[in-house]
Length: 315
Image 1: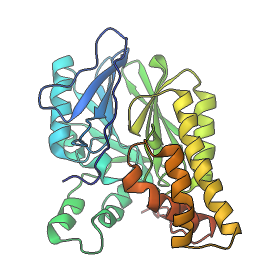
Image 2: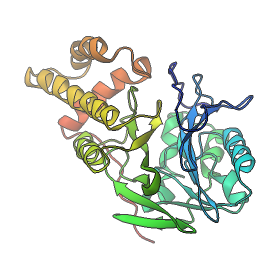
Image 3: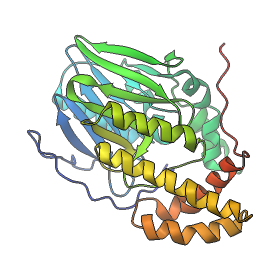
Image 4: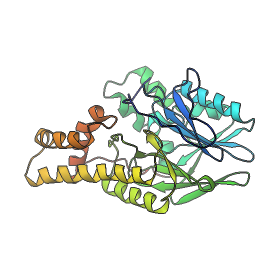
């Protein structure tokens, strides 16, 4: 079931050794990023729900995120099998949101270990309910309860995973949900950001802390100035695109803050900020879907009234 509908995105072709390709009937565009690293970019209709990717190492494969439905995950597994006979050893969830984890079970059944920041294990079965609204039905509840949760978790800082000699670094960063991981492939200079980076696309701010998020984006750009960044939504980008996304968040914060200083609230803030936002970012993906809620979420954060998810208690 589609949770998010992507606006049309103009995909570009990468120059490394092969052209970006959309397998027949596939819900994603498969893009080679070099050195056996691939991005799976959601198609223009949003059929996969989000981006994902995978890394082929010496003795296995690591998958980063698994889309919002099992059909897309099965298609990615099939594409992996066309490229290598090595098993999928790891699935790394960048955060708990449904559109990034719904295919976990496909890979777990194939023998992969699902790995994520510790909060994902708890939130995957609880907080995902809110995306169906207050009138969530039994079928939707069952879908959330049936999601395959991470089997291995880490608290914070960073963890290294190995595919033979190939090193993958998973780092915790705050901002989008409170349980976000960035996946670095050092030898290929590729960084999978999950929803900490949206390229020319308005973000979902439902769980966000924009102040912490801006610090994360600044660090990502400074630590990886020459990297290829794979966003959670939108096309593959570079450090300049990460900076552009940070400018969106900072600009939104400044626009809303200006209206709060005029003692406006609620609908009056949306009415004042929306035209400004549209003038700058009206061509970005998800503008119609998220612009108003972005303004309201930012107002709640600046007023100190925004509810964010609290860390799960250790068992």
